[in-house]
Image (cartoon, rainbow over all chains, first blue to last red; front, top):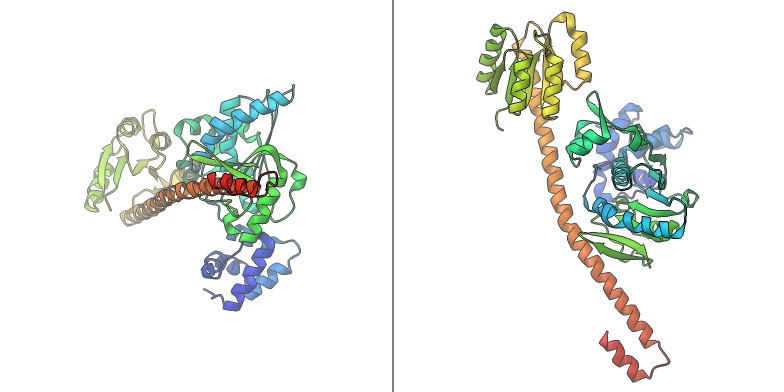
Length: 277
Length: 185
């Protein structure tokens, strides 16, 4: 295996930061080797510097996409860490539906954004809860968007097909048989759930105001890969696009203390969500 | 590691017994079923790590039926098909339906043992990954409780500080009154 040199660690870390906002600490430099050695081989690169130049010089950004797919962590499960989904079911959705119904005479709008959707499990878990709680979508207008920086993750999310390891944990058998159809060795989300969601590629470091305003934002376990400064900026920008009575859900081990004073934490059962001050 | 349990399904008694003899010697735990129907009955009663089944069998249930029942009963059960050379195409179709491997007749035992070792290794890896995930869940849950507790505590202190600040800045009150009220918060 080709070894990465100290100056290459600096070079690549800076490059990765530039294309993704992901900050790789020097102590995690081994990640570069374990995750990039395959790309090095595939691209026939003689060194990490060579890879860097090839990636920079590729106008179609094919290598850049490969690097992003390799460096992003797609650890996600259906209903990962049950808390946020119980929160959706018992607190956020009922409250929001009431609030929106009181505001407008027609069917209420629900706009939900999963800002680090990875391979789609979070988005489909949300879709399943909405479906179970509110039934088919004649009484509400839903916009459920999942975004992620990784092309590979977004394409799997759109394809809505999961292998047995991806569905084995977190998903009850009853939900599996109700909302999935077996497709050979894999499982495919049923069309009625698939149709509720849309996916697109987005780098959270880039502007996202064009996506509009949101009633609920899920931004779980992604800011942990950013620098403190970037985390502050990100949550501040999320505050800008959240409705005044909207809800923000972050990862269960994340904190906004000292990051964004515009949000106040609120507890419901065993989970915390955030609202604007 | 505990020995893996294997259900051997074959309508030919000679093959069945030969497989049993060889696999028991290798420390696998073996049950036998003489056809697909018997296998289905057995799969509904007991969980197996591996099902080793003939593809073509008389009666209403063939190897594909056994595969489907096994996967239905426990998705973690691995199914290896045994097939005549002429029906390799069917075996490949079966792999698309979730079978993990196939063997051609006549059975080469070295090859069979190698395939079983492969399944054993994969299962060990899966267990390892699921143990790790379990450990991560426990760690994550414990830290989440601590962090959330601190998060609420900090928010509460912050709110109190802001109240104190606004009272201390309240020029409508006498300085001593401001301090007294601030101390009450």
